[in-house]
Length: 271
Image (tube, rainbow, N blue to C red; front, top):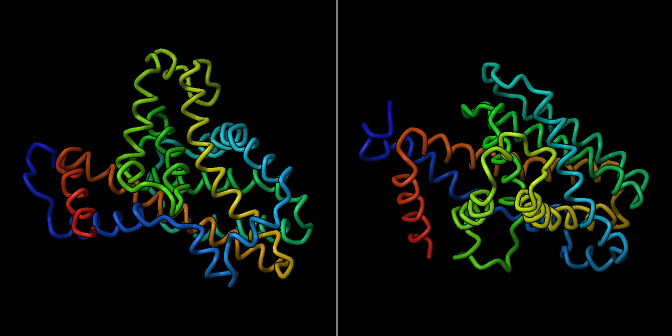
């Protein structure tokens, strides 16, 4: 079925889009963590030493590049979809979180590349499930976009940082990258604008990393709770990834403009 043959979304796909819209417009890891740990997240952030806060932010960009390289290359890019592996990724993430919780705050920086790699591996798996070709640079960038989509805060202006707002901002960055540079690969960016794009995504991801670290360092949390924090973290990005690649799948089927109109109608109905 092609985009040209569909004037409207089916009732089933409208329901799917509605569910995706919910996860993309309410991607609050902070709320999930606050509900889990039972205290305001701001309290945990205040406990985070400034030097650790800065180190976590600075580590985000370099971590993303290394993690994306391993996460996607470890998948068979054209293999048949394999649903049901989300639980496997949660288990691995929980294990990493348990180790981080056991050894305390100094282990958070060491754990960051591991949890980020596992998260991107889960995102890439979901992308493939939704019909994406992971051998394409554009698809790999879409995987990294999920980290920006899941890194929004309550203070963000909805008009500027809604789902399509973030996609548009990232697309503007990407449009300035020469085609031959993009084809060369995004894992070793050689063009200043491509470096700028990855840095913009890493900045939003750094917000989530800081929130996660703040909860992990709360004194009452041990190895078990560290594992549960990572479960919340993984579930958060799996939900955002499934929604993101669902929208992209619907865009391939119905056309980007029609899906965006329906999406914006859902947003307007909530205002």
